[in-house]
Image (cartoon, rainbow, N blue to C red; front, top):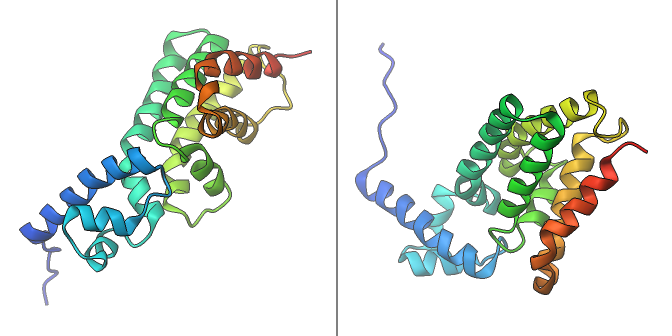
Amino acid sequence: MTDEEPRAPRADAQRNRARILEVARTVVAEQGTQASLRDVARRAGIGLGTLYRHFPTRDELLETLLSDRFDRLAARAAALESTRPPADALAQWVSDFAEGATAYRGLAASMLATIEDETSSLHASCLAMRQAAGRLLGNAQAAGAVRADVDGTDLFALVNAVGWIADQAPSLSARRAHLLSLVLDGLKPH
């Protein structure tokens, strides 16, 4: 008996997956993270069953759309950690994260919803990014720039809250940098 190597997906399945992702980027950009999966399938010219064969849950589709962004943020944290003083590295990463959190309406809320749900695909995808941010936070705390009672969940929740505010009141999105500076000021030791 020989072990068979897994077969590559059929060419039509690969095309369908690529088309779903292409259309999903557009639909999610228009409608936010709660975009209609039925609309994604319709615009992609496929049946809803085909979409669910590739992406059984909304989180799995979002995870695929967002995983590159999360990987870049984790890599960015590592680069900042080695090139900037701890407080500056943390502040720059928070700014980068907040900018990305507004890429899709509802993204901040979706990420917050998965923070405790370890079964969510988004939770797993965010984990490396959150761990990288946690290292930046720990470094800033060790340098005395951030209060000791702040943990990674606090940081993630506060920065996501700024993204959520911009979702809820687009008129405030221009004040995102100011709101983030208020958050960072609140993290400083008393």
